Length: 245
Ligand SMILES: [Fe+2]
Ligand SMILES: [Fe+2]
Image (cartoon, rainbow, N blue to C red):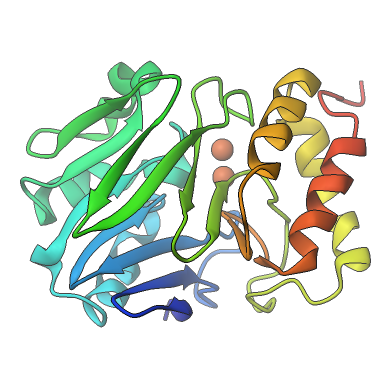
């Protein structure tokens, strides 16, 4: 059973994270999927791999009638992000997928016949979901060459995709509890999967201008309060693009 956690509840909108499924095979990296609901309509952020489509469908149906999921977002082209697309394509005909323009010709290999692909320009853009603004913020080369984070200025949540990812066991708590101990679980992921120090520092500069109460990555624990700043400082100091060969 996939676990659902409401991480934010505002006047008219909510954020729910899905993941931590104990039935998931250990050979597959654990992922966090997110739903943002606004006035009853929903967007799924990084809806996940094809192997978890069935438990995801069950889990999301507990929160919203399927036909009210009108939007999807894919931060980049990886299989753990969006290989479920061909099945969502059957479940949500007429929905819109917001994803990097760079990957359109690639992501469509997962199956995208009835879903409308909205190619995000390199500089990003904002959309409105029933009055709620969501900003797609450029995060190119972190780690994919066409890649975006999502910022909700109302909830002050930054969904950071693979940035801030940690490799944790599937029973791990939803939130980071001990940042110092958490660093060791993030180091390899960032050093090896992130190729560019320049891109990293540009992104840090960009997001430091935002007010962020919570940073929600696609793998591992969610950062709250001062841990967001601690993460940005740690990431800034980290040398990336390193393979041990
Ligand atoms: Fe990725
Ligand atoms: Fe990932």
